Length: 189
Image (cartoon, rainbow, N blue to C red; front, side, top):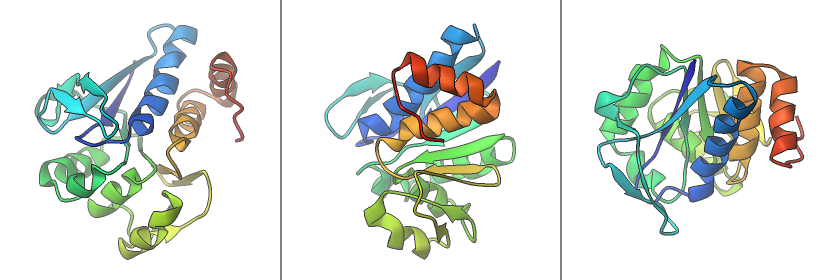
C-alpha cells in the first residue's frame, strides 16, 4: 500500500488539491487497494478553500502516518503557509522518508520556503517564476519538472498532470495512461 498525503490549508486553490486527489485515488479502481490518499492539515479538521469549498481532513500534521509521497498544493493561502513553521517543518522532516515530494502550482513556493529547492530545477505558476528564483530554484518553463525526488507542476490544472506523472513513477506509464483514459483526460507526457 502506497501512502500519499496532500497538505491542505485555508484559502488553498481547490483544483490544486482536488486534481491530484482524484487522479491518485483513481488508481485504486484499477489496482485494488494500492494507495491511500489523505488530506493533512496543520491542525484544523475543517478547511475552507479559496473559492468557498469546505472539507474535512483525514489527519493533522501531529498524527499523520508514514508517507511515501507528499503533495503540496498552492493558491492564495500559500502566502500564510510559507510562513507557517508547522507546515514547513513537516515538509522538511518528512522529506527524508519520502519517495517523492510533489507540488502543484504555487505549492512549489512552499517547498522553496522550506529550503528544499535551492539549486534545483522546478516550475510554478507563470506569474510566480521570479519568486521561485528568489527561493533559490532554477526555473523551468514546463508543465511538470522533476529534479531528484522533487516533482513540481506549473499551473492550477497541472495537478492532474502531476498526479499522472506520479502514477507513472509509482507504477508504470501504462497504469498512468489507463487512469488518464478512464477520466477522459488527454495526457501529454
